[in-house]
Length: 344
Ligand SMILES: Cc1ncc(COP(=O)(O)O)c(C=O)c1O
Image (cartoon, rainbow, N blue to C red; front, side, top):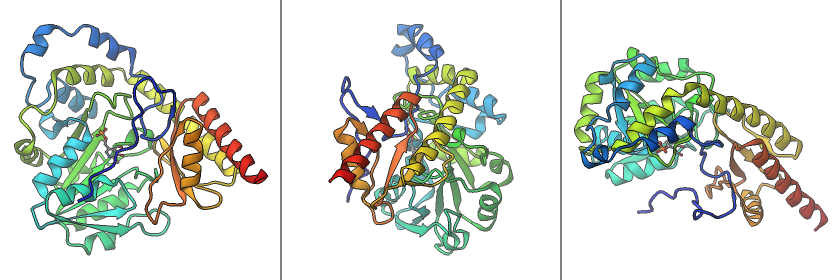
């Protein structure tokens, strides 16, 4: 089988403008670094809490749910693996809208299960009938979606949850950059699992922390499948510090949203077509229709964006929203490529 290919991670110290894996444009809160300096040897000598305390309780109180409704993972990818092993039997099936996060079909394959890619309806709308027709064990829905950044409204998600017998996993890795989320559905439906990540919203992709929220009996099934100590002591302490500093996190989200609006407008002036995004990236259809040329041209200038070599995405590039300076450099790089193309 082919494994999942993560976006390129340049070696430390390499001078690039990195807009290819949707990390937060800003550093983690200073409170995270302060907590790091206060770690004591004794905290590392012992095994960590098996359920990720004190972070599990901190997340529960931030969201207004009981700690028993939360499971913590080594990044949300860990929880995607755990969920697949828990809910999808060998020979079973995962359905997902397409295009979406390309890890989902890989997880199905690792479980000896099938995956069914159901094309988005119309302008990135939820293909409810198509998803239900797959008779799958689970539906994985990234909302906001990657790589489009589009958001599906809660009413559509609710009607899918209502009509579906299996598990509906709503991957909200980018929800903090969006105006709305589907968290309230975990109270309404026992088949809904909400998945969140600290990687992007709290600028700690290197820590590897994510969590899932669902009704207690669903969480209990997930807890049986996870590794005994899937989250380390250090990341749990630092993750608490990250979510405590809401003011800092919200400032980064505001800045990213403002840059997202500016970048979208500037790209449109340069003849790109941009799907309106609710995440910390945009998906842009390139003039000339060959995404790879723009990806390679920007890479030669030390600017990394993401290119997906699949039929639905070949004419596009996905650009992570960076700082204002990074966005200026990106726009400068694109203008230089457009000018070189014109002169040729
Ligand atoms: C839709 C989606 N879900 C989950 C993840 C994984 O995030 P984490 O860093 O929490 O494993 C990503 C990462 O890019 C993503 O795009």
